[in-house]
Image (cartoon, rainbow, N blue to C red; front, top):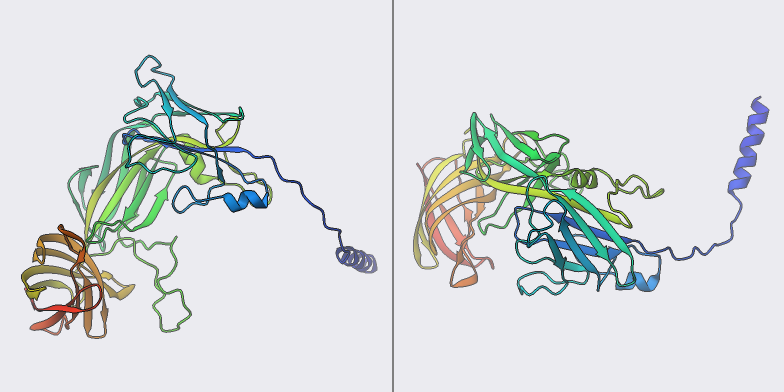
Length: 419
């Protein structure tokens, strides 16, 4: 038996060493791909129409990015694109035509990107919408979706519940759990995105989760297990702690979304590299997605336990860019127990270009700290002030901070005193 197995193994090994002739695989047949997620919470809807790559080198050279962050195939131009509300066909917006050349100059323009008119099509919860795309060469692609609708969206923390959108919600990342829930009238599941805006109100999305349910619970001390570690190099002295989702001393923007079956299937499935199977496709005559989503966002103010000597409230008084400033910092170690070098602070008071109420991020390095406070001059959008460097929080008494502009030119000094 052992001899027979050895012979079979040698035969298999010899077979794998054979050389095969090159075989030219013909170009594939193009397939129409549509992407449209209608949103009743938005006043403009759009449809992206493109086709799959066929393997043609020339075609690959002309492929361009239509959606930021995505690499679509070849856009399809000159198509006839309509969305019809099958539940309300007699409405003035019951059937809506989409165009690649919208009249509104503020809308993004790109080949294969079709826009509908403002506030069309009409969408009520439970309505059935039909998407129809007919290409210039006669290919027809259709898809259907049901308009989602929520009676209410909630965020809860520390026994407090707010409707979304609503007032800011206070959360202690060391003690509390954030709960997001949707009272859905029509819809499949809830999606949640958590982002930290900087002082220029630019969002930094850093956590996204969706479940086959209408409620999600996120512990305040949860780390982002989808993210890479902070330090990607192989420095043995680096801090390889994963990033916390919630950072104390920072305002967070939490977006809650209710989606339909088609969007849920689109998010949870995908083509496997070898077989091309696995993607749940609800489009007829092509592939892609025609789904529905409604979303709302709310501010969450994240604080933490004061368990570090450097944490606390500081009054900063001085001069920046020749302007007298007086602000209060509510300072926290951003990631307790994981990374005590990152800091966050709520900032409120009189700053260079007027009153300021925001949150800022920074680091402790040695005995000093660096904190970036952004504020833009309304008369000069390119001006930002300023970066604070220096000081020794936690040593007691007062300490000095130097203020720098974005080019690291010193523009002022301040004295910080713990309140």
